[in-house]
Structure formats: structure tokens, C-alpha cells
Length: 584
Image (cartoon, rainbow, N blue to C red; front, side, top):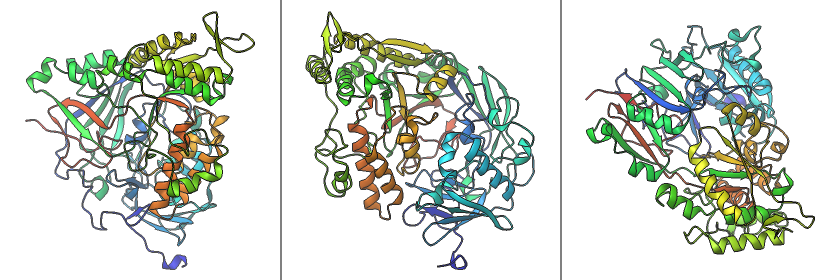
């Protein structure tokens, strides 16, 4: 099949066809009749020293990546992996998905009224792929050539067989080339307010205090089906506070009008303040069907202390989740059981079988115990002493060459086992968890150093993997793909700025990522992800904590959202995108 026989499409799906037809009116979880007006105010902890989230330098509010920039296509959060046109009105792909061609919507323009051109698109891809954030480099390395193929048309030809690339290439932010002429994009910070094609523009800010984005009344894309009924709030405002306790008090006082609560015990016991009892604040439970991802405390295997899996296993046994959960949440928060738990992609109980086993067996010699045989996290009896698991931890340390000598865990040379736990300022709940954990470690003769640093130092240190153990959160989707290499790929052992904070280098994991991105059937894809989940979980790199299989969002009664909740639930692109403000 040649180029001439390719047909432009309004959307593209990883497997099968997009759920919405060519003439769809709006996303199923958006309200096309939502009124414009009002504002949403969130409480953030920490601060920011940059307005450019597209480069590794500095700390930008994380929301800017999603609110202040637009891409050729946008994801529907009601489907596993489907894109629909935004800046591009259509997409064509080659017969083996070896290239993807986009036709720009002729109406697309930046917030200053200038048109979005193919030149802007090509400059954005090359700039982000070379000097932008490392998350963009992987895709750029797989683009063989990028060329204008006609008026408003740009084609990307890939240098590797990878079906996901045709979708990924539609999801990069598009920047205005002329804004950065003669400027140092890689080192930009607060001096340049982005000119964007998105519905919102930055209107005011004060580092460490607040950031305000206002809806652009002349936004070009309000009638694009993907955008219809979205982005109708007049203002999105982020207020910054020293820690989560102060941010919660601001919400209670009405300075903030929406708040996500991650602690089930707090949700039940502390959301009885006057605004709730009056009905001015509503407590909403938002279900979802997405994978858990991993949240917990990661161990840095670049350090000698953590290279032995038995040591990592021992430290997982010493972590008394059941007691910590009861103490901090009243025992109401379930635990993450694997990286893709709570979804069809998660590893299943018992031994590996079928395709999953077939995929893993060639790597049997490299796999850790449990990957093929079956694995589950240790469960404590709920008491503070956690006797059984502490005893198991002691045995594992002994197998790894560590014993308690004079009240301290030491090796045969008398060197003490110790490490640093790095925490970010304002993370009061993490501090509480670590306080309980270090008390348990003392029973093993282990006395770690706990260091708390500000946000800028924390980012610098985690970017360069300068820690022993730290809080770790990686969200995963129902359509994992090439980003998994940035999370778990061996390049991240030395390359700064990846999410491979644990420093893993696993041939089995990389092979499973290759399989999942090149799967031509849904069955092979699911098996490859389940196999990857086994490799990650039995690697014992992270001490998992809470699973958030629902979202708890408290908000002003005037803030509304549609009845139809997308598959991904309360995910990026749901709040504030499809919320509106309406007086009773």
C-alpha cells in the first residue's frame, strides 16, 4: 500500500478503531452546554521558579504542561489509548505505521492571534527532542525524518518498528517558534510567559505565592469537537502554601475551592467543618478503572547497600503497612499490590502461565524469586511489633551477609548498614510514615538519616539520583508504551532526569517493553504488560503504600462536573477541563 492509498482520519486508536465517529459532537464526559464563567482555585505545596515546564531546568507548576500548551491531537480519557484531532484536523498513517502525517486545522492560532504553522510544529519537535526535557528525547531519537509534505501538512517517518510512535508523535506540545528567536530556551525561567495555542493564558503570578491563568475569550478551538464543552472556567488559579496542613486550612477558610484528599481516615474525620455541614462544600467520590501505578518509598540500587535483592526484601518486610495504615488512615486505604494493580493489566495471583510465562521464561536466569513462581507482598498482623516480618527481615539480612552486632546491623567487616531517607519539605504525611518506619528499623539495628530539603533541592537531588531512599510516585495508564523505557530503562541508571530512580537495569523488563509497544494483538499486549508487572514487582525496588482506586474531591457546590465519568476517572484532563461554575 502506498501513500496515495492512505486515508486521513479524524482520530487514531492503538488497537481497532476510535470509539467516536468522524462527526462526533463532543467527548462523552464533557458537557457541551456548560456555562462559561467562575473560577477554580487549588492549593499547592512548595513553589515554582519557572514558567517553562518543557525543560529540565527549574521547577514549573506541573499543571502548566497540560493547561498552557496544546498538541496536534488529544487523548480521550474514556478509551485505553485513542487520540482525536486538536491542532491537527486529521492524521494519516503508513500501512505498517512506519510514518504518520498530520494536516493542521487552518483555524489553529496562538494566543497572540498568529497562525500555527508547520514551521512551528517542526521547530517544536526538534527543540524539545534535543534540548527540551528528557521525556521528549526518546521519541525524537526514533524519528528518521520530519518534512512538510504540502500546505499545512507535516509527516514524521520513523526509524524503528513501533506502532505506538504514530500516536506519541501527535502528543507533543506545540510552541511558537518566533517567541524564542534569539533566546536561550533551555535556560528560560520566569522571564518569558509562553505564547500558546491553548484555551488559557498566564495572566499573573508571584513565585512562591500564586499563579493565575485566564480563559482566552478569542481561543481559536472552542468549536473543535474535542474541545466542545471543556475549558469553560474563566480562571484557573493555584495558591502555593508551605505544607499540606496549611493548604488544607486555606481550603477550610474558603481561599481554595477544590481539594483532593488522599487520606481516607482524614476524609471521614476532618471534613466536618462548617462549609461542609452547611452544604457549601460538596464531598465527591470519583471511581476509576485505571492501573494503580506505584506509590511508595524507592531504594536506590546504584548504592551498594541496596544492590542485593534480599536486603530490599528485608526492608519491605520491616515496613509495617498494616500498622501504619491503621494509625494514619484508620485502616481504610488499600495497598498497592503491583505496579499495574486495580486493572486488567496487573499481574495475576500464583505462578505465571500462558503467554506471560512464555514471554518471561527466556529470562529465567535473570528473574528474581517470585516472577515465575508467584509473589505477594508480606502482610503483618497489625500489631506495632510486627514480630513475624521482623524475624523474616532479620533472616534475609543474614543471608545477605549482615548481622546485628552490639545492637547495630553490620557486615563481616563491622561496617554498619545505614542510608539516607530524603524527603521534600511540606510532605507531612510522608514524614509521619517515615517516623513509624524508622522506629521499626531500629528493631533491626538500623538507624537511617532522615533529611528534609526544599522543593528545588529535592528536584535537583532526585534528578541526579542523589539519595538512598525517597518518596516515589509514577502513574501508569491503561495504554503503557514507550514512556515505560523512561521509567524503567537501563539508560536511566546513568542518564539524569528519568523516572528510573531505583537504578534498575533489567534485560527482562526491557524485552517486555519491546513486546508491549510492538504487539499487534490486544492479547499479546496484555500479556506483555502483566509480564513486565511481574519483573517490576518482584524486583523489590519500592516499598508500596496506598492505592487510590477512587478519588476523593471536596469542592465548592458551585463547581460542577458531568454525570458521565471517564474510564480514567479523576485524571489529567478531567479537572479542571470538563468542570464548570454555576450558581445555585
